[in-house]
Structures are given as C-alpha cells and as structure tokens.
Length: 545
Image 1 (cartoon, rainbow, N blue to C red):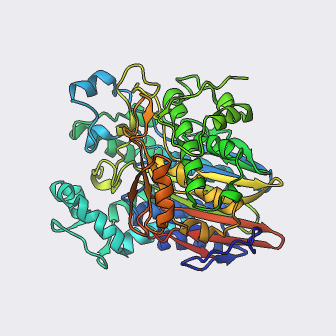
Image 2: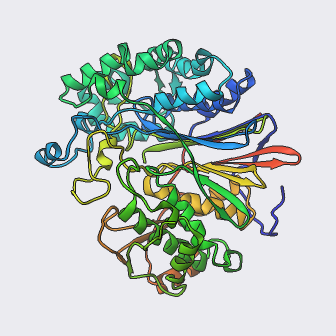
C-alpha cells in the first residue's frame, strides 16, 4: 500500500482498512447502516441501499426518497459494470410557457418539483443483485427515523439557514423546527412520517410509492399547493438500466454514467490531461492546476453545446470521448496562459447531492450519487409522508434553442457522476462527490492524485482542492477569463503568484473551505484489502469491517 512514486503525503485522518466490507459516505450513521447490513449477510447492493436510505434520514438537505440519482455497479460474478439511471423527468404538465408566465422556474416551492425517481432505482438494483429482504435493508434507516438521531453541527447550520421557510409550513415546522425555532447541534431529530413511508416501501415495494397510497398522498399534496405532479407522472415512471461509458487513462479503465449525466466531462478531462506529464509538473503546482483547469473548461464548453437527455437530443458522444479528439483539444491548451475564449470543439462521430461508495468481501463495488437538487430541495414535505420533495426543475433552461430546454416528460441534464476505475479488469477505485458542476472537477483531482501521484484515498480527499467557476455558469456564449479559480488556503503563495501570471483570477478560500464531500475506496487485490477515504470537510466517515 506504499506510494509507487515515492511521494510523501500526510493525511489528516488515518486510512481505514478492512477485508469484509467498506462504506464511505457523507455521515457516520449512514456508513454504519451499510456496514450493519453487510454484517447481517448483505452484499454491496444491500449495503448501498441501506446507506442510501439512511442518508435520506440524517442528511435530508442532500438527498432522500423525494429525489433522484445514479447507481453504478461492478458485479464480480459477471465481471460487468452496469448503471441504473434513476433520474425523474419533468411532469407532463410542465412546459416552457407556463414557467415564462411565472417569471421563470422558482428555486423553491411546489413548482420546482420534478418526478422523484430514486426509489425505483433502489428497488430495481435490489431486485437484480440484492440477497437480503427489503425490510432488513431498510431497517437501519427506519430505526434512525423512529428512534431519532443527534443533529450534527453541519446539519444544524443547514437547518438554521432554512428555518424561515420551514417555520411557515405545518409539515416542515413539525419535523425540522422546535416550535418554529431551528434545531441545535445535539438535539434529537425524529421523522416518524418518513419512517412509516420507508416501512411501506419495504413491505409493499414499488407499487405503494408510484401507484398506491404514498403516490396518492404526494399527488394530492402537489395539487393542494398548486403543483404539477399527477398520478400518471408517477405511475408511468421507471428507472432504466444503462450501459456506462468509459475511457482509458494511463492503463486504467475509468467508467462513468452516460448522459443525461455529465460524467463524460471527467472522461474528456482525463483524455486531455493524459497528453501531458503530470508527474513532472508536480501535484497541486501552478502548472498541474492550470492544465487541469483548462482541460475542464474545454470539456464544459462541449457539455453546454451538445449534452441533454439522449432520448431527445443527438449527442456526438463517441467523438467527444475519442482519443483523436482529445489530442486536438490538448493542442488548444497553452501551458503558460489561460485561454481567453473557450468554445466547444467539433467532435466527429464515428448538487445539494450526496455520494457514497461500497465494496464487499466478494469483490462487488457500488458507487451512488443521489440528490434532491439544492439544499433541502423544494423545502416542502409531502403531507404526512415525511418525504422532502426535490427542486430538480431548477436545472432546466427556458431558451428554446438550448439542448437542455424544458419539455414535458424530458429528463434534465444532471451533474451527478459516480466513478468506478478498473485495473486489469478488476476494481481498483470507487469515488465520487456531491457539488453540482464541481463534481467532475473534484473527481479529476481524486483520480489523478491516486493514479499519478500514488496517494491513498484518504490523502486524495484531503489534499488542497481547487474549483473553477464559470461566469455565467450555464451560459452558451463563449467563456472568457472572467472565470474565477477558487483555491483552498493551503495552496502556497508561489502557486498563487504563478497562476495569476497565467491569467487566472483567484479567490482564496479557508484552509478546508473547498467544495464537495468526496468519498473513495481503493481495492487492493493481492492480498484483498479495502482502503477507504472520506472527506473531513463535511460529516463524512469511512467505516471498514
């Protein structure tokens, strides 16, 4: 487990190791839920769903049954990587004219809600791969709902920021406030309604959530509040199994979810970076950061021009991921100066969110990204169900010529992108992070830290982090040097000066103030050892068995 490049790094937390199972997630109680399920005989999918359900309880500001997500799996018995796209489309009644009349898509409230797809994704993955009964899988999350759990400092800050909205609505007021006042760190939060919902799903399956009593309650709540959800929206929805996309990077196979995920960006970034000697540049030097930022900017320009729901838009994906195209893109990069204008290339055809990673003793690996969009989603709980509804509609565009323009029944483009890396056809790395457009940037840093610089997962997630922000973030006009490069305070002054010389506009964050909540598991095959790393910037923890 030594660094192959003889580079010394010191992690703030120790590497967590195990041989029977490993879970890294955004909250220790959720990681514990996954390990508890594996200790009861469950495999990686059972543990993943336990972790997923528990995160919706202890991190409701980031994900839950009212949201959506992606599930990426490597299954040892078949040697195959498969994906579940559990992202929900816009309701049938949602259309561009409606929102233009409203003055745009609201960030909060019932009109920000899209069809929740996550539950069907969980159940389809469990049906194919799970070995435990659903009531065992959901039991840890149900226990956290019914018996309560202590509010963390991070969660308390999130609740304080949303308290004005929560105090105004009877369902959120009774759940997330203390008689209208924000819950404090150490207070015990109970979510009895959500516990009942999870128990119903565990015993009755998909039908109750998408056609039965829970569906009826969600639809009635939406109608009462002036929303768009109908029984047809829910009953017609099905998560889909998809073939992942991949590229090679320095002898490793890197797998991602296909569009409507933005996972192609990471693969494009790696294809470009592979044309340069990253090791000689050094880790987190001005030279390596500049290179990766430029690769990111070029790849994001392609996303803006080409990527949306592939059922509605033709995407030149094969060309975008080709090595020949990456070579052309690499030639556009000036190592001494930032590109002042970044437009999409011409490929030829031939997020608040949470992330967690799970690996089991049988060699199975799972990476999941799930979300309710921004913090606390729509900030509405659907009646007595305890379900905090998403605000995913806010990701749509209303410009008629934009590939991501709102259409009824169309899926919006997502930033979520789980990652699995193989070496010699065996799992080597599982990683991911929340953070909207930051995700593919942080994942680029994680993958290169581990592959190019030989870091452990814990070292990789703790290394000083950067983020490139485009202004405007989602514009279709050419990006310019008005972009801002954020750096954690642990980057040294010399790096600052050199990046400024290259044309970057810098914003210096706190020492640990960078974005994301990265999770990673590295799998050593001989001997079989699981090494977990979890981001200390939030509440994340790795637990091994």
